[in-house]
Amino acid sequence: LKMRRVIGLLLLVLFHRVGCFEISGVRIEKRSNVLRASIMTEETYSQRIEQSLKRKYGTDEMSRVLSSWRDLVAGEKYEAVLGDHPLMKQEARSYLPGLTVRPFWSVENLEWAKKLAEDWQIVRNEFDTI
Figure 1 (cartoon, rainbow, N blue to C red):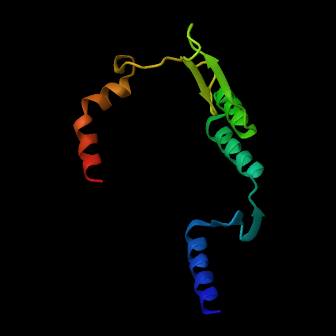
Figure 2: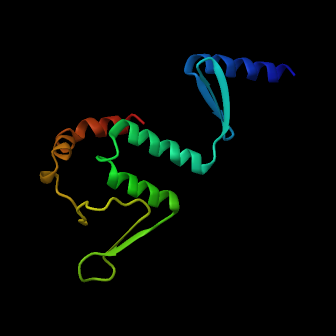
């Protein structure tokens, strides 16, 4: 009984700070001073992610991403042969149509990659501390 009270108090503190929490697939949240509990199924979870993406970025800007997200949730798998060789193929569980497919990318084509390559020593030092 004491352990239940301790866990209950911890959840109450957590709930007070963040306004919601999730345990074993059950989400409890507070909206306008009303507690609401819902069971988080895979479907509702994926729907919430999609709704969040739409809210943040809009549907027009996100049409390819949303299509890719729906395919991922449905378990679709993308497969394509690259070039003439049958072993050069791309397989992906998550795929965005319209992206350029290349076996390797040069840092010269990507500004963010140039910066990362220039600062490789910083990344290495961080890795060494782990």
